[in-house]
Image 1 (cartoon, one colour):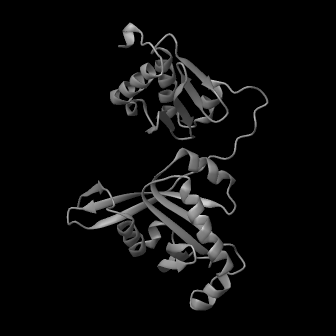
Image 2 (cartoon, rainbow, N blue to C red):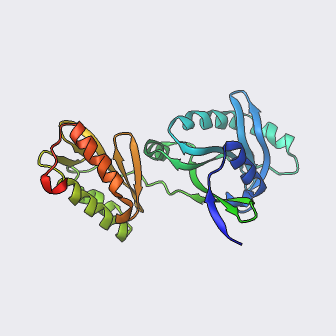
Image 3 (spheres, rainbow, N blue to C red):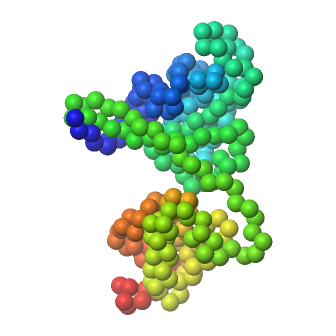
Length: 260
């Protein structure tokens, strides 16, 4: 049997796959219902973990941005207020009403802003990415992986340095790709400026047009509104550099001849 990675057609198909295989989220998970009616809209999946804690599972077939937090926290508020009633409605499940509900967001990818905001969220929000697989018999399944959220950084005692961002990356191959990317950026043109802030490294000509966002196991190369996830040097493809040069020129940059 062979597998290939495919796209989930929509959130309904993703929901179907997870309801059929709740262990893809975590072992012991039991689905209570789907498209649960609340006073703020339908909740995708309501479940309970093996400790009896209610789970609110919100699904996005593509990228999830920061606006989904308003939606899922509204569901959380409803579930929190109705936990005792839900325990009576599902008497066979033994819901633990003494513990606050948990939130799990499942999406193909998450925006950088969302992953930064959830570090401040109360209650805790778990991020999970999914991969949809299809067999040669046209059967589909889903693999769900937890996305680590970097801890809050301690406010700096001195101005941030590029080396601080390099040190933040734990994977050696990612660190090497990051350093090579920085070096190549600096070599693009004479009037290019690369400067670090606490949260990212900005690139500017007459104004900012690109940014580098470090994570422990990868980094994002943002050019305009486009985000590219980089895990190794080969991920920075020529089309990315072409886009970078185009934006550089657009924002007043002049490319060196040897970088043409």
